[in-house]
Structures are given as C-alpha cells and as structure tokens.
Length: 154
Image (tube, rainbow, N blue to C red):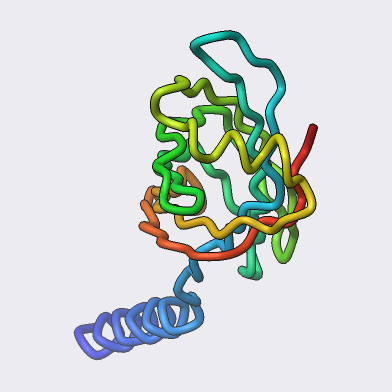
C-alpha cells in the first residue's frame, strides 16, 4: 500500500514538473511611437494625439490593464500620464493605442514651431512606459525606448 502511494505521488510530481517546464516566460511587448499630432490649440494649451504601436510577441494573448508613460520629443519633455483602457492583445498581434494628452505652451514652445513648420522632418523621441498586465498573470513590464517618429499628424 505504501509503495502504491509513493508511486502515485511520484507520477503527480513528474506531471507537475513537466507542466511547469513547458510554461514559457512572457516576453515584453514591443512599443513604438507611430505618430504625433496637434488636434487643437489655444493660447495657453495644446491637445495632442499620440499613437503607439503595441506588438505582442508571445504565443499567448495578453490583457493590458494600463499604461503609464513619460514622453520626450527632441529634448522637450512633452507628456506624461496614464492610459487606463483595457487592451486585449491576441498572440503575435499588433495594434495601435491612441492617447490624447494636453500640454501647456510654456512647456512645449520649442517643439511647437517644429511641429507646425516642418511636418516632414522626423523627430527623435524617448519614452519610458510601464505596461501593466492582468492576464495571463499580473505583471508590470518597465520599458524604455528611443526612436524617430516620422508621421506627424495635422
């Protein structure tokens, strides 16, 4: 009887270990700034639209429950904030996430002249972002990216 119990326990342990070995670690999503544009302006504030492309390189779907970001364009800190809409990402898929932000003239005056006058000129950007997952497991990826945005919306 005792041998039978050990055999059963050994089988269960082997099955659990093989199941754990087959679990692949999550790869961080790839996020890039696709476009940037001014949607409206007044004397003291500007409303901008940021479009981030998010790619899920995993073999399983992800549910992103929120993004926290800080974005600098050129050498100007342009925006920081949160995007709390749930984003469902199928496995190996890409989708765009639109984020509307408000900036104030004193903060972005050097950048506005470039956005308004030279829409064909690419802009260097840097952003830091926390990507908060709720599925398959709660986890936060801390991303830092540099790139060039060429699509300036008007």
